[in-house]
Image 1 (cartoon, rainbow, N blue to C red):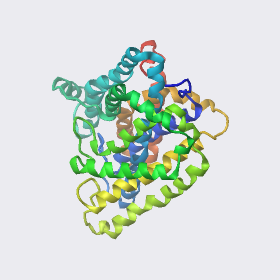
Image 2: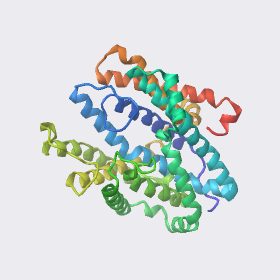
Image 3: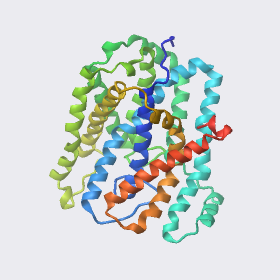
Length: 372
């Protein structure tokens, strides 16, 4: 790595805050009808809410976790350069391994127990039973688990990644190369989902989404050599944003034309089907445009905001604690029996505020500050 390795920037912090908030809202939306797996669901018959929240989940999934991996990869070379191999390994084990273990064995089972109170179970007895039974639930901390795997792989191949990065330049940020990325992303996603459809896991990981995660993490690491994420131009980003916006409704249109409203199964999760192939490439086109837009627009934003600077350090802590917060808020507001979209807005905004507040409190503890 050269001395041009990227450093933390205000625009990157803005993205991290927005992505963390979106993760919390994403999981809240599943609670009220969106497609996906979550600890707690409140069933209802409002089809419009289900369609809108499912579309929100699909758009989120196209880019938000992939962008987390992109940013993680982007700062990995600088971390290795600064800390050396031993320090890098220790840092990853502490900052990723400890939260992963804590959530998997303590906080994950607690979130399950909290969700089970809706069925009449006592939370403390249920939690104790889950721990006694050895229940392992990494929940959203699968992200830390995957990052540990990716970091280990990076240590093995970082000379290759660095070499690739040295061949890149601003001219590499071209529409042709983005089309190549999309082609590989979509093909990889389709093939992986023949093996593990989305919604299914192997070793606590939804392998069906890993085509983009792998490409973006290692692509981000290679891009760090020339700091390419900080050189996205409007001429590159704007056309892809338009493509993304135009692509988003096509999934719903395709589902309707296929008879989804009449009860015809429209399965995009995997298999040798046109919907699965369409969804794999739909995801790539939508996600690419949104990520480019975020990298461009947040960088040209106005002067650094005090709010962003306060919230940015709390992102990882908020990410860790948000599952029990979302479930607890959902249980607390459920007696209101509002429209599902209103419940989503209320529970989601409250969960964001509470998760970041708890994270801020935890980071005041000296020991946790070094982890979170």
